Image (cartoon, rainbow, N blue to C red; front, side):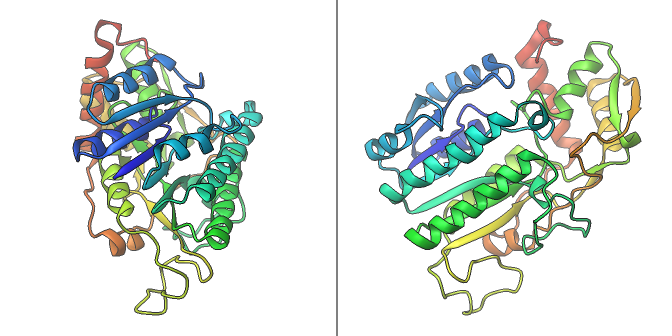
Length: 343
């Protein structure tokens, strides 16, 4: 296949590109190298991909007029996986314009490019934050998601809605997936596991929200990439086929080749239990400072994985006892004697 991955220098994009390249596919990776977090980490990811056969690196921002249309016209991908976005729940309170630019205008530009240059399957990364103020657990794709708590969540919901309209109007087979707290090697420095590791190694206290009782559906990056890779091969069928053996938990649209799928571990873990596991992996104790949940955060996330398993079968479920040591090993190897730097 010829695959375009946006956000290829990002955490998930890097791992997905490696997986696709290992299978022998031709991958074009687009990234804007925003300075939201350490750009040198993004450059290192892309440098690793550039060393692999079949990879073409392209630098540019989603919101740049004409860039995506020209890129799709030149590379003619079979598959587009749209991972590029302005991420971060809390940062949306500080710099909302970045979310409008990347997540709204950028995603619109991609949809227009795919309309002009049709693909076999368009896959889009959304977020568990889209469930917003929902309290019924686990979060199911069929739940109404009408109460976003941050602009980040609202921008991702808007992207989902725009993608559905394009799927309907232009028959673009589209899958949107909602990710749940992804972690692992090459992870993002703004995420809790990375922050805690840096601070514990540096002898700094860590802030533990909700006294450690908050729960997150931690998803190891290798498991998530496996799920995305399998979903690439399962584009939504044309409108009207759901009735043929369809399941009541499926989200296949009744008027478009569009589907929404959770990708999570389905096994929420308390934050204090995650910190316990990190302490074991580091061989050090953390100094914990209890803090209330920040605005926009929720007390619990829990993915229903019923639809995912129905579509692609059982996917790996790496436990924290394996995933956290893997992250710690990468962190030590990447930062070495600089191990307190990251950030």
